[in-house]
Length: 188
Image (tube, rainbow, N blue to C red):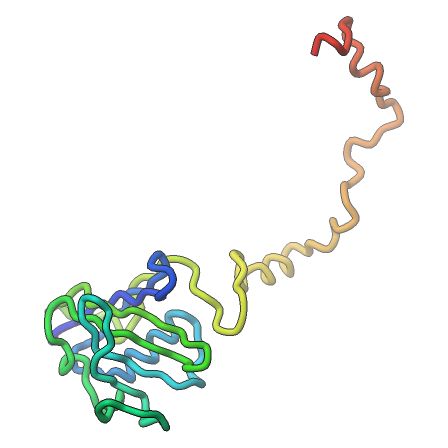
């Protein structure tokens, strides 16, 4: 059985990508849900794949369902179409569009074909994450969801007033005494 590895780039930033491994007998619906999971998106919106060439031009559409729009040719349906049936060459590409209102566009590129199926892997799965993905409904901080856990664990509100009392003493040197080391200010 062939195991296909796809690299899914965010269209605007090719430094942000996810690698997905999937069996050639699995459907585009399986790939669709795996991409959403990899980028932490929900599955509430319309989605479609386009078969593509090496110049990222959109070809035959493989849609989640038949939507109320004009089609050049009737779309294939994700649930009924296996990934292996749409692979034309070893560098096959697809364009994945999610949420037609927000127009999230991902470039899907076949990067490896293997005959070795791993007994430890449940297919499809995400095998690599690179870069901080976009947040579906807003902005994502560099710390993400983990900051709330840190804040709760260490109670960061305690130090909110400013500096602590360490180093405070009554016998502090005045500013003049601290600078008077036998020289004048002009030498600095």
